[in-house]
Amino acid sequence: MLIFSLIAIVAVIIYVFKGLIIVQEQEAVIIQRLGQFSKVLSSGLHWIVPFIEAPRPMIKIIKQRGIDGRTFSSLTYSNRIDLRETVYDFPRQNVITKDNVTISINALLYFQIVNAQKAVYQIENLPEAIEKLTQTNLRNLVGQLALDETLVSRDIINDKLREILDKATDKWGVKVNRVELQDIDPPASIQQAMEKEKKAEQDRRATILEAEGVKKSAILKAEGEKEAAINQAEGEKQAKILRAEAERQAEILKAEGDAKARIIEADAEKEAINRIITALADKGKPDQYLIAMKYLETLASISRGQNNKVVYMPYEATGILSSVDGIKQMFDKQQ
Image 1: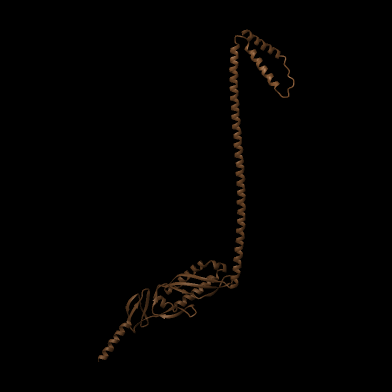
Image 2 (image 1 turned 30 degrees about the vertical axis):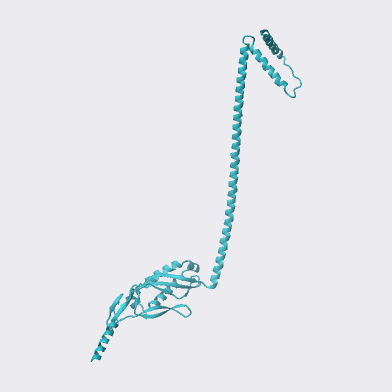
């Protein structure tokens, strides 16, 4: 009897523990009752009725590293549905462009299960379905572009592919967050031709840059020479202006000096004449005296010339001399 009791207790404990399920954070478990959907278990501790209720497994991708160091993916069944964002690295595939060039593309897909019930019941093999859907739409998008457009339109392809996949996987309870094209590799012959074309383009740009450099140097040199010529002409102009200004000032100063000298000379002569007039006022004719003196000064200046050999005495000079002789006699009488 004791043995049967122990067996019963152990059976009850096993029954209870078999029904206990601990769900981790960001995980979900689909529970079926007698083959029909019953509920979705979120994170926490739950208990189900053993043998009547059971988790519904789902196909899951597992990444493994081989002996050669390469990473490969395998499919397995799991009762736990991961609700976190998952990265799926698609194997390389060959895609034909619009201009009939076969290229190899490696893509990354970031998706997240937002409805566990749909992910289990709406699609049989979710990873394979997403992979095939991605490959098909990628071929369609690349097939509409030429090789050059494909190489420079990676972001456009990513956005369009993400939009198409997100819309198609919505009924599976999946949200496609991002699509990234890692590598786009054209054939070796195309790569060589592209490298040659790139090198030719680089040489062309180098030649253009060199020609532009020479042109700019010539322009700068011409501008420098022009600026130097302008500066030189401006300097000469300023020098001429300064010389002319100096000569003008010199002439003005000379003229002012001559004028002052003449004024001083005229004042001196005036003073001398006034004194002569004063001295001769009561003794004779001052005007005749002054005329005679000026006449004698003129004759003296004529006779000082180096080429003058003979001095002619004008006829009128006799009258002047007689006047001078008369003045002399007058002074002699005064004495």
